[in-house]
View 1 (tube, rainbow, N blue to C red):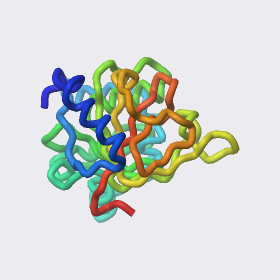
View 2 (cartoon, rainbow, N blue to C red; view 1 turned 90 degrees about the vertical axis):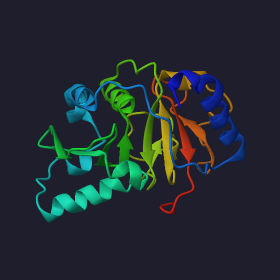
View 3 (cartoon, rainbow, N blue to C red; view 1 turned 60 degrees about the horizontal axis):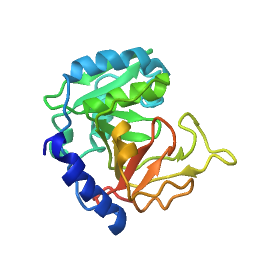
View 4 (cartoon, helix red, strand yellow; view 1 turned 120 degrees about the horizontal axis):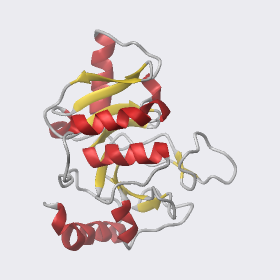
Length: 219
């Protein structure tokens, strides 16, 4: 589905999910993209700041450990996407490609759990970490193993604290980018029901929609 049809078709579908609760879909439309390698090169500027790959930041994994890392990263997305995705991680403050992929997705193991991002989402992640403006286009992130929790009001909080509205979400996809601000039908409350679609970081530049998914990985 081309992005040009999203305002009429995809957004209506997403808003329908907001009314129905947890989504059953496991695939998302392709982004309009620039080459993944170019996105990764740009993201590398901000990656030393990222929590996204922090779990691997100080590790030098080789051999069997590489295989274990790849297997874990690939659990973030449906198999037909994950098997052809690029697998990346942080090593000594630099981006390391563990496995070169053939599609537009990049998967990694984050502090909050495994995730697979399409190129616009990589650009959004860099904007978030560098406190710059996010892309106008709509990006997508898979987290089909769920996450370990995030503040729903402070984009840079690293742990639960009084008043930061910590929320943990099971298997989900994230819709990111400035286009999210135009979406309606999703709760924007500090303490949402994470079993239903909601907006995280509402009112900030980095607000995004969390869409719970029904998958075999759901806990």
